[in-house]
Amino acid sequence: MVGIKAVNHQFGQVSLRFADWTIQQGEQWLLLGQSGSGKTTLMNIIAGLLNPATGQVHINQTPIYELSNAELDKFRGQHIGIVFQRPHLIKSLTVGENLLIAPYFAGLKQDRARVMEVLSSLNMADKISSYPTQLSQGQLQRVAIARAVINKPALLVADEPTSSLDDHNTAAVLDILISQSRLNRSTLIVSTHDKRVKERLSQHYILD
Image (cartoon, rainbow, N blue to C red; front, side, top):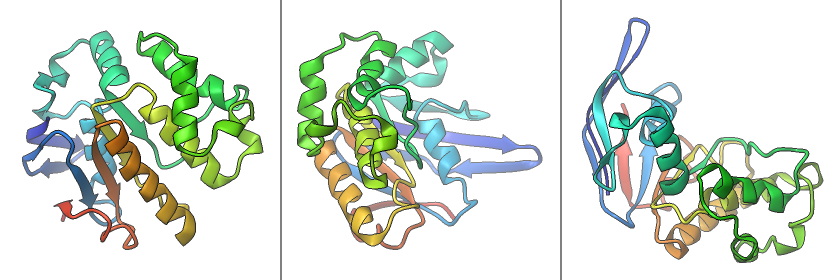
């Protein structure tokens, strides 16, 4: 379902080389490594946000870096859900409106019933008309996850989603990511250097 092969990225004189990686549909993986090991770089490459210097990434047999920029943007919107380290929500829009822009930018139908379905699965239906400034940190993270899964992506990636959370919210976010990936039949990759996360998923890709 996901494959990276001979991927290399350059930062000035620094070269990051990543071991080949094959992930089957529906699998759940941890991408592990210390700060500065290249986790975010690799996650951005897999998510179609950062073109590698060499190598290729295939998602559902599509070589994503052979697509035009416009094709890649559309492919990403329709097939990849991304949870960033911090929720990037538009403060002037309600929770429901923040979710509705995801299908809009992906060229998909805006479905208010789907928005309610996802929010209900995250126990956030009562916050549909709230604004981001009215939510707690844990609630913001749930909305970010809701936006990532709203289009039923084949691949769900989360980059350090627990780095700023306490133990209670860390456990809650991991539970949500795992359950949402199963509910939406999405392959899941979570990058982290958080020791609290390591025992939750058994398949590990480790960066030195």
